[in-house]
Length: 355
Image (cartoon, rainbow, N blue to C red; front, top):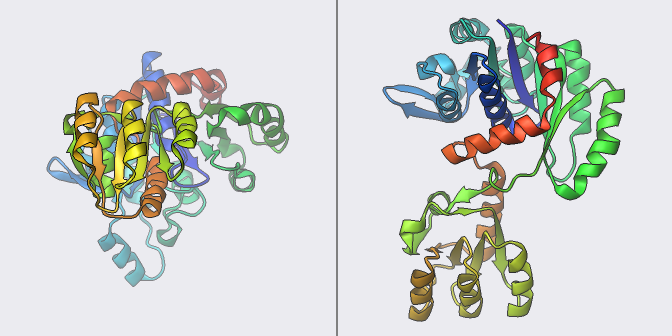
């Protein structure tokens, strides 16, 4: 049965979004869809077994019921890495991967194979890189390239050179609105001339990049001291309150669903953010707000979080968290499906897969 390996030029590029979006869309078209992640790096106990958190979330979204160790036969843990380092030359683990893949793909019209990290490099130390695994499974490949500051043109061309016709094309993800015209009119034609077909251009989506207040508190080691019942509110971005009130207001109006990072002593900006119904206030330096701020926050139902670190350190962690937040929330699954369906050339993809 046909399969499709979804890799990327770098970690956290949108592989899960594409897997979910394609899987949900193809199921709506009446196809039986399987999902397989040969190598997982998010190891966790799932039920009575160990598996990969991403694989479990996507399997659930696609209605797939498989043992976690079948959906992900190789889990990268500290113990796994120590064994690999001690063994020296790579051991062939593809037999286990192929065996599990056959179980997953049995009876399916299409099986989506989720890659880990970057296609060319991640897992190379254990001979489990994307090139090795996709060739062992004998499935075509799509590569996702995320537009953070610029595209990884060289990586896309290098993968095409190495994979040849096995690479069906690429999907450019998280493209900012101001960059869409250049991507469509300049970059996509350039890549096409070099043999890399652009199968889709996914614009930046605020919901998919958002993170809940509860998750923020967990990841930042923060304590919710106000409106903790609103922990499911999501932050789509963040603002750092180190400016005068007038300048802060100008920025805040552009990003109303932002988490606002402030020093615990900036009650003037805290009040502005609360009145503007920000997603949450993150107060740094382990400084608590005064009673007036707490009362206003409770009345407006704006969560306030207190963290120990300084403003700069929290901002750096927040930036990394928003960039790497996993697509495991149920409310994002449908959004991913709509985004992919609207921006990926499904006809070209089905033709390439022989569906």
